[in-house]
Amino acid sequence: MDFDVITIFPDFFAGPFAHGIVSQAQKRGLINVRIHDLREFTTDRHKTVDDRPFGGGAGMVLKPEPLFRAIRAIQGRNEKSSRKVILFTPQGRRFDQSMAFEFSKLEQAILICGRYEGVDERVTEHLVDAELSIGDYVLSGGELPACVFIDAVTRLLPGVLNNSSSTVNESFSRLETSQMPDANYVLDCPHYTRPESFEGMRVPEVLLCGDHGRVERWRRKKALEKTLKNRPDLLEYAALSDEDKQLLE
Ligand code: SAM
Image (tube, rainbow, N blue to C red; front, side, top):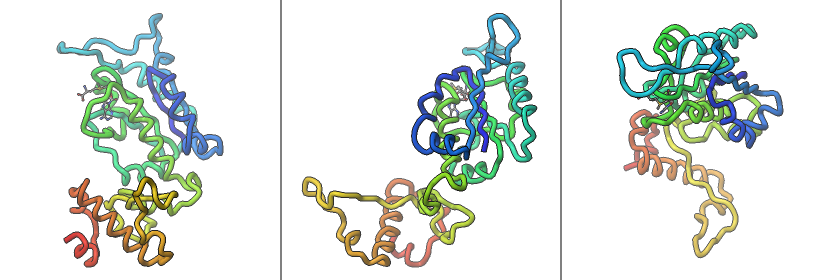
């Protein structure tokens, strides 16, 4: 999958993509991340990307011309049969795991990072396929949301994680291939590793018993407990078995 990121701060991305799964996926040729400096698509001497808002008000707005030029240039470079232009904005639909899964089917995502008050609305109306928010708070720019998007989508691409089942049981997982539709919208269970006892805090005995069935039942119970405690709103959408409902009660 190709990710083309349009930003006024191209250096921002040197760190986030140099580590872990996204870095490995790039090295293995499973994804391409290309960073485009919006200023390179300006035509004036000062490389102007923003201007004052019509109608007055505080803050600057990213001008339409450089963004139109950037997106058209990126689209013109190759013929991808499935691609989308995505704008990060607090006014967008809230990005979640099921959206990440849908976007992971694309061949190319062109990501626009806003700054200041945002981008000229004509860009949104005429070029953007999806407006995405990463949460109900306001950040200074779309660069962090772009990193979040690329990370979340990359880990769902075939071949990126060694053990594909590791995404199936993760929090929010609702992969269409999942044989566990009732896993939807339930958070992940707690995890433990060595040592068995740390400063008197012991790993739950059930995880040491070797009985796979017991371990799986315990994990489901703990996942439900965590969801009830931290995100009870999710349980409204979760397909719960009778046993799950009993455990919740
Ligand atoms: N005036 C905008 C508003 O109130 O909706 C806020 C603009 S914000 C200061 C600047 C840029 O940061 C936005 O254009 C967007 O690209 C990005 N941004 C900020 N918060 C975001 C969020 N929660 N999700 C996605 N992008 C966000």
